[in-house]
Amino acid sequence: MFDNSLFDSSLMREAVRLAEEHWQYLHTIPEKAFEEKASTAYIRKVCKGYPVDIIDIGMDTGLVCFLDAGSDKTVALRADIDAVPTEQGMKHLCGHDAHAATMLGAVHCLSSSGETLPFNVLFIFQPAEEGTHGTRAMLDHGILDKVPQRPMRIFGIHNRPEIDCGYVVVHKGPLMSEKSVFRITLTGKPGHGALPHKCVDPIVAAASVISSVQTIVSRNVDPFQPAICTFNSVTAGMSESSAPETAVLTGYIRSFDHDTHLRMEERLRTLSEDIAAAYECKCSVEITPMVPAVNNGEDMYRLALRAAESAVGRDHITDSAPTLASEDFAVWGTEIPSFFYWAGSGIPGTENAPWHDPAFRMDTRYMETAVPLLAASAVVE
Image 1: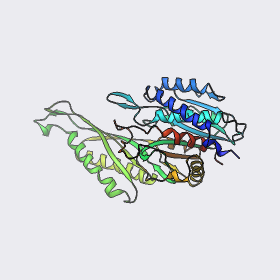
Image 2 (image 1 turned 90 degrees about the vertical axis):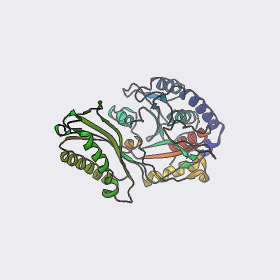
Image 3 (image 1 turned 30 degrees about the horizontal axis):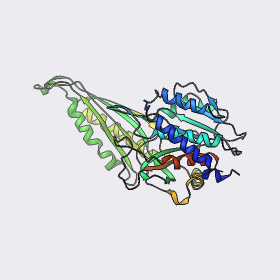
Image 4 (image 1 turned 30 degrees about the vertical axis):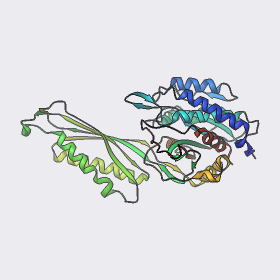
């Protein structure tokens, strides 16, 4: 049995201190998804200082390393490393810099503990979570076939500014939503705006599609099933006096329940095509599935609860309502049993801005919770 005194030891305090230093540096080099070369180089440099094997899976960014404890079983830990694109450039407005730093802290304490770990540990520093493409890319590059041993389970942690620092959300069931993105192209007949009878105006059709799609959630979805169908961009026309040929609408569908999700996709397609026909427009609807829902199952929940109790104590474990934001950690769960925590990053007594808000910030004590939580998850039995 692993000695839980690690979680209240000088080694853990040193791991937290080092994680804080890593965080300070990583915060200064925010990088776009799949372009995290400086971050990857830094993570690689740090990991080379520990007795872990760096595994080449053939990707330009991200890093995978393996701690061999001599076990016949492996547990994986995942942290994302990319930043958020803004009009002012790339910024760490989602805390992925802290996630990567936390993982480096876990590498330090687990590889330096002197304890016989019950499991080998696979550390996954994943690129491109923003846009939800990174996990799929790593799987497509054969990560589970290229590592020394396929992990039996995987844990991930994301900061949550709405939760006070020091607390850990251990939630059973759906936590974050399934997501599909869509693109609707309406094609009419361009012409002079003063001769509307000579044109087929796709803008009018687009307005009707946008209005009608709002009924999907209100009339086609079980009121007890949270769901969103949102338009995020409308592109049409460049002239004040002419009707354009096309109008393009983009957006996304989010839900927790997969059958609900499929029903919403069906209704989006049908409404768009039928309304376009009513306005004499042609219609193309492209729906692209992105990620499933993050869903913490019963068995993994029990393990996560034990790990959190070891790391932070029962009094600092809480629950929270799920969110319709999405996370590509969910894709790991399609391959191996998975659990996703939220670790509080909010400054107590303060109104804390949410993820991606320009005012987003994290309590500097976040590492004191997240590092031991990751370490505990790697060894929980």
